[in-house]
Amino acid sequence: MTTKFYKILFVLLFAGSFIRAQQFNATVDKTVVGQNERFQVYFTLSCPDLNKASNFKPPVFQGLNILSGPNQSTSMQIINGKMDASITLSYLVFAPNMGDANIGSATIMYDGKTYTSSPIKIKVGKASPAQQQAGQSIKSEKEIAKNLFIVAEADKKNAYVGEQVTVTYKLYTKLSIASPQITKLPVFQGFWTEELDLKNITFNVEMHNNERFRVAVIKRAALFPTKTGTLTVSPFELSIPVQVPKKKTGNDIFDEFFSDPFFGRSETVDFTAKSNALQIHVNPLPQQGVPPSFSGNVGDFTLSSEIDKKELKTNESATIRVTINGTGNIKLLSAPELKVPAGFEKYEPKIAETINRTGAINGQKVIDYLFIPRNPGEFVIPPMEFSFFSPRERKYVTLKTTPFNLKVEKGEGYVENSGQNGGKEDVQLLNEDIRYIKASGEPLQKKSESNTVKWWFWTGIILSIAVFASVMVFGKRREKLYSDTRLLKFKKAEKVAVKKLEAAKNAIARNDASGFYEELSKAIFGYLEDKLGIDKSEFTNDKVIAELSGRQVSDEIVNKVKEITEMCEFARFAPHSEGLKGREDVYNEAVALIAELENSFDLRKRK
Image (cartoon, rainbow, N blue to C red):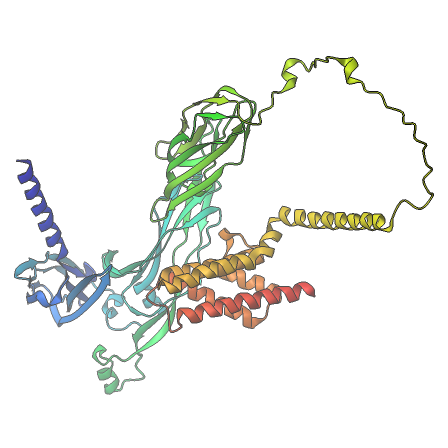
C-alpha cells in the first residue's frame, strides 16, 4: 500500500512538473484604453523545444479591429545547461467604440497536446489627445519617460534601528534600449549597507498601472538603519541609449511612406532614467526591559556552545566554541563575554563568519574562546549571555550557553604558590649555611695602572644608544600610524588593491565574468576609499571625481577613473553587456590606473 502510494505521488509530481514546463499566456499593453488608441496583444508559449509547437488558432477579438498580426518573434536562452525558449505571436489592435471589448481564448498545439490562453477584458473610454497619439511615434523626452523608467521599492517603510530594509530597483521599459551607463549611484546615508547577490539580469513581463512592460531587477541592497528618524535614500540614475522613430523632415509623401516601422527608420537618443527617492522612518529600540547583556544586536538568532575538553592539566589550553545562527546583520554581531575563574588566563576570541546575501541577510558567526588554567582544582565556567532585539516579536530576547564543569590536575612545570602558606620559610642548619672566607698565604700583586676601559667598550655603548634611538623613533612612527586609521588605510591602500586584483585575475582564468567585475570593483573602489578617506556609505562617483580634482590629479587620470568605475558597475549589473573591451584589457587598464594614481599621490606628497 505504501509503495503504491509513493509511485502514484511520483507520477503526479512528474506530470505536474511537465505541465508547468509549458505555459501559454495572453497579455496586453494595457487593459484600459482610449477610443481608437492602438495597443498590442501578445500570445506567448514558453517551452523547451520550439519545433514541437504548431497549429496556432487566434482568438475572437470582440469589439476590436486588427491593424496587423500575427507578428511572430522567438527567443532562446541556456541557463545551467538547460535550454529555455519561447515564441510570441502579437497583434496590433484598436477599439473603434467606447465600452467593453473582449479578447477570447487562443489555442496552440505542443507535442500533441492543446494549450489554451485565458480570455482578457478591455475597458474602452474616451481618448485623450495623448492617447490618440500613443503607439504612433515617440519623440519627446516626456513621452520616453512614460515608457522607460526606474522604480525603487522598499519591503518596509517603518523599521527599528538595526532592522533590515531591502531596497529593490526595477527597470521598466517598452522601448528598444542599448547598454545603460550608471550616472549616479544611490546614497544610503544613515544605513549600514550590504549588496545583495544579483547573478543575472533578465527581463520579464509585468503589468504596471494596467500597462504591459518588460521589467528587470537591476540592483538590490540590504539596509540596516544606524540612527533614528526619517532617513532618505537618494535616486539611482542610468543613462540609457533609446531607439526612437526618426522625425519627419516635412510633409513629403515619401516621409509618410518610409516612416512605417517596417522600414526601421530610427535614431538613437540618450535618456537619463531616474528612480524615485525613498523615505524610511526608523524607530528607536524600546527603552524598557533592556537586558544587561544587550549590546545592540537586532534580528532573530539561536545560540549553541561546546568545549573541546573538560579534564585537563595546569598550563594546558582548552577552547569553548560558541555558534550564533540566524537572520540579521551577522557582520556587526557582538560576541558574548566569557568569564573565567580566578587563576585562569583567557585570550582574544577568534571569530569566523558565514553570510548568505541572497535575500534577508542570514548566516552564522563562530567564536572560539581560548583559555589556560594555572592552578589545579575543580572549576565552573559560568554561562555566557547573548541578548538581541527581535523585530518580529517586538521584544528583547536573552539566550544563555550551558555552564561547563572543569577538572584541572597538576601538570609538568607546576610551581606551588608559596604565598598561599603565609609566606613563611623554614630555615634549618643555619650555622652550616655560613661559609667563611679562607685567607690565602700567597702575596698580592699590584695591578698596572693602564687604561682598563678599551675602545671597543665605548663603541658598543655608542652603537647601543643609536639602535635604541632608532627603535624609539620607529616605534613612535608606527604608533602614530596605527592610531590614525585613515593614515593607516592610506599607507596600505596599494597593497590591499594588489591582493584584490589577484582575485580578479583568477576570475579571468575561471571565465567568471561576474566574479571578475566584482573583484575588480572591490579593488578600485577600495583603493579610492582608502586613499581619499571616503566612508563606504558615502562613496559615489561624483564625490570621487570631486576629491581627485581637488587634489590636483590630472584630468586624464580622472577621466580614466570615471570610465573604468562606470564600466565595472554596469558590467556587475548587466554581465551579458560587457562592451567591446575584453576582460584582460580592462584588467590591464585597472592595474595601470592604480599605478598612475599611486605615482600622482606620491608626487603631490613630495611637493
